[in-house]
Image (cartoon, rainbow, N blue to C red; front, side, top):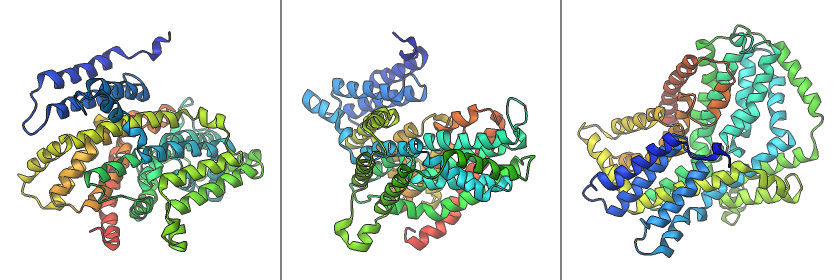
Length: 490
């Protein structure tokens, strides 16, 4: 037996203690049913276990599904109905969208297309350090729509390229020379990740969860499409990507300003990769086709009959990659991130859904609404408070998914009740859900990878995160406000 796979005693004890405390010792509030309160106990216990990393999130999700079925909190006295409810998350198309998209993104790594894209940008813009930074930004932006694992994108594809460049200029944590260029590029590498994650539904795993939460909170009156999300995020997102490297350049100026060797390194690496293979051309074609379908281009050109569901598009893309041999079934079976995502997404979506159905989210939202109403603010002021509290509470979360699952629905419902335009609020909170990743070295899976490479100190990382949080929020409100007015959301 591998002891490392066992639950961690202290985080597990805390999670269990919180669950039991809520279930047995905290009185059920007025207007809340006992079943809803007990499901809340299981939910908060699960979130606490995720934050404390008591077990891998997939394993915790299996336990959570089992507990929901055993306790029958969704359908008391009906075991068949309880297990059906516990497993209902697996029927959600958005969950399958993200799982299939993760499988598809394996092709970027397997064929080398992701690495080739990165080095091609560096070969074009790599004469100066700032140019190298923008090359990393552009590389991630290009692959973001089809890499729903932001950790894989920023940590497994872009970060090795960034480290190769730093090494080429003798900038290494081991040599104590991080300030030459490595510190700056590492911070750009990371701070690109939250912005690109905010720009597309398929750029990070929790985004489809947000779409689902909004649809359920509005009784399907608002169903955010891939195209709507991308269009709304386009202008503020591009502005953030343009400004971010300049801000970090000012905060943490690299000692090396000119980088002619970067272009040489890129050419060397591209030579090693050789000419583009057939598998890369196929992957590029499939990804391009998927982006066109997600953006609704076929429907615009040929009519509503060509309008496909986003999840159907993902299945088509995966099927094409399998039929052409770019991916094989072993690649799919080995895509552990995809299967892991499928499990934990299903569990969290299921619990969040039934918290809404049982009235708990509505009660919590009303409590928030009443608290802010006492301040006598208009909907803009009230929305600003909601967003700031939601955003900066991420300091207390080590999982973006846990944060969104715990807070998004209630804050969205409260904001709508306070008068905020529903579509606008849904999108702003959605974008904030990714941008808040910038704050800490544990805010998302990409953070420990890049921070762990040692190019920055903890103080430098948190300073960069705090400054970029302010810059990104200002650009989101100011640039986004103008853009969303043009789009008719304000």
